Image (cartoon, rainbow, N blue to C red; front, side, top):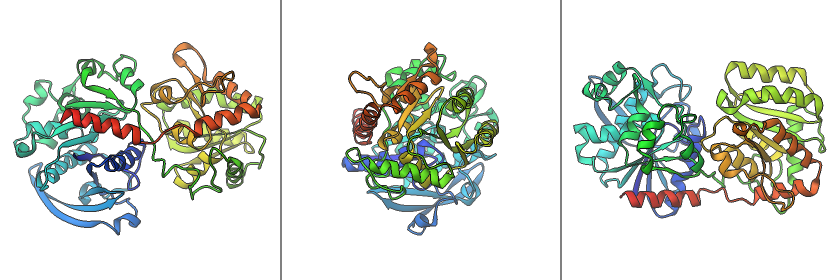
Length: 475
């Protein structure tokens, strides 16, 4: 099959979150299965020169956009047997960050059309087009409804919802100005949802199949609680809604070969984990102690991630227990201020790094003992998979992909890889964390939990095979 994917971000070139990790890993695994994969992403100015220096100019294309002829250049870069195509237009993508720009609606409307222009100019037609989240969700609509693309309208389409909370909601005027389609599409409710033009809703309505990033999240978004007001539409489409669990790139995240950590290790020889723990402590200026549990969190700081839960749990825990905590992340100001105050109140036990550092993240995964994920909802989550790969034990809330991947430890069977809270059943996160800390003092159990986690299969190979089967069924 020839598969084309389009997304707003892609590792290792431009990354804001888990979507980029998926776009960096899934195409590579599909290529290994023998499929031809093209990935189309914007050419942001923040992409490292390390990669840009290898880009090859393929073509220049132009199309009518908002009443003007707009030109963009397409650069090609072959990486891991996948062809990456970068859309260059400085008006829209020469920015210091990927998202949160005042003209995001216009930028991604332009990108949607650029994706279709590229596909239309390719010599070999694609078998399937796979788009991701709201930024590219209008592509299937344009493919079917805009006469400009009649020559390729038979291409089958898949949309993956990585986070239903982000839907690309704008006014009717934004739809009319950016897409130049007849007002009836809004007035008849085709692109409208509850008083707004809704990009994701439109994509859900037009694609052949919809996927989510874990089986549990697939079921959750059909409910009022998790459905973000789209659950009614998703219930109508549930026969075409499939949950496929994300994986991680086990070549990038491999403690046995990771050059970003202090010392490599694996499940059969974990001495290097203590070396990495001391490296973390030394790097952040905390006392270098092997006997104290080192807790960490690497996260976007938002309400979704359960920071409010940590506001209740961490201050009390730091008073009552002998432990250390290191945070790597950024986000809402109220949460950043909370963690900064926590570091001020416990300077010899807490370290806060506001921002992101990829190398430091790897060291934290390798050196920490416990990883905290008290998310109120989590479509899949990659951090729990990475942490387990590095022998760091997750304490997580039982939701979405966390429920699908973290298994409560059973001390009788010595089975399981972590600890779970369940907010819906009043099992507080603090109790799950206390249970985890109790086992930290029991080396026989602690080593079993670490080993169970490290020996899990978190690769993309299984998930990629599921996607390939899905594509074949659609075609």
